Length: 276
Ligand SMILES: [Zn+2]
Image (tube, rainbow, N blue to C red; front, side, top):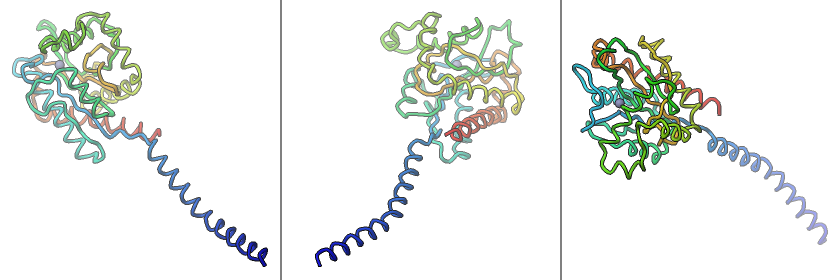
């Protein structure tokens, strides 16, 4: 009798176990979905950095200052991203005419754990080279030409306007090539993705926006070095070239440039997310 009860019990256990199999399968399936969700790579947080601001006007042309154009294009880029990519959080390092120190810009991006850092600037050369015009997108690295180095020196030299800069930047000399070589090593982990995005931006400028693309370049920008994510610095044009300055001040010109950066960002995001 006891045996029979035992058998009955075992049968029930077996039946219960069989019934458990679909449940377990379902749970494993759900768990695998959950796991896939965790490892899924999303590009859904971008920091847009309008160069300069406040007491630091950046460079200037005949009718405008770099800080104002950089801000307008940055805000326009953010607006287009928010309108078209609802899953992307847009963070500005500044959204008005305020002075933000270089390492605060990078720190902000690091603290927010951003996926991409886009810094927007305008270029300039001495008056006797005013015919030079076009766009350049930089990633962190050792400069390969004197021209790139000049741009770096100008963009980095804002450090000298910051209070306590000697302590904050631990003796970093924005004009020293040795410092720049050393610092470029820190962005190495992100160099491929940074180059990928930079390529897409210059491609858009050249093929879709109709600008004169002067290509992707490498140089030692302080603001890029400090970021721990793929980062680019875009020189959207030369304020030293009167015709280009007019384009950069034109609202439609600003929308075209911002749209080009947006499409490059969107393509980069699609590409990276589809690879995972
Ligand atoms: Zn600048």
